[in-house]
Image (cartoon, rainbow over all chains, first blue to last red; front, side, top):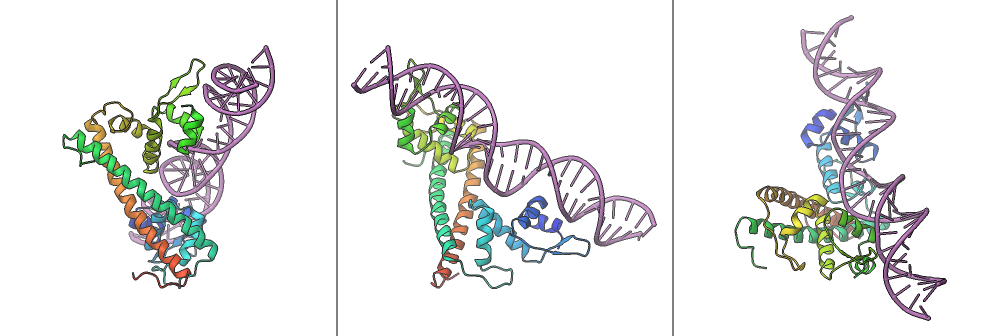
Length: 124
Length: 124
DNA sequence: GTAAGAATTGACACCGGTGTCAGGTTCAAC
DNA sequence: GTTGAACCTGACACCGGTGTCAATTCTTAC
């Protein structure tokens, strides 16, 4: 499929899809004229990339990580090197902390919202 | 207390503490010479500010939100306006989505780590 | 008084994914 | 062929919390 369709299917801008390619996150065949031609599994990959970005990982970490992820690209998945495993473990801890922060902030927001709506804030 | 001590106690840089003041997130008395003099509750407030930042809120939203949060600043808490409640509800939804993303990414990381360590990936 | 450490303001820079514009090329339908 | 939509590359800018440096001033202990 072409970049326009992929953008439409994933909700990710064409700009970003091209950027992912420069970062080694997403590859595409080319038509004789130079237009990108994506395989079907690109949709899943783009969604996964977005999830990783949302989780706070940077392009280079995602680039290392993607080959090790079992997904629908049809290829065999690589085994993470010990160094990468160390990095990912660090990321995992960061993600844990972030989840904790998010849960706490969500509670606070709920309390403020509940108070403003005249409901008694859930006991705390 | 002085800015240096507050920075040490919270783990937040002096630079950031001064920035928070410019954003209306944190106030301090001043000594006759102009040095900031923070009350004890500033520690809790700074930690809360950091949590909100970590949750993806911007300075201006936090500035609106803080007066409505019941915390240790000794003051009575304000009631959020309907407009603010709307904004906070939107933020709450964003936070929910982000938590979902983080949980999913964490699972993927766990699988990659487990595979690399020769453990069978937790069934999925 | 004086010296050393701490605090002040102001300015500049960074990161890094994304938006956007410009100027040119390709594709597909007629 | 021609035409209009889609695509190409390259460049510039943004955001916004934080790091850092500079030049100056305040505080405190001697």
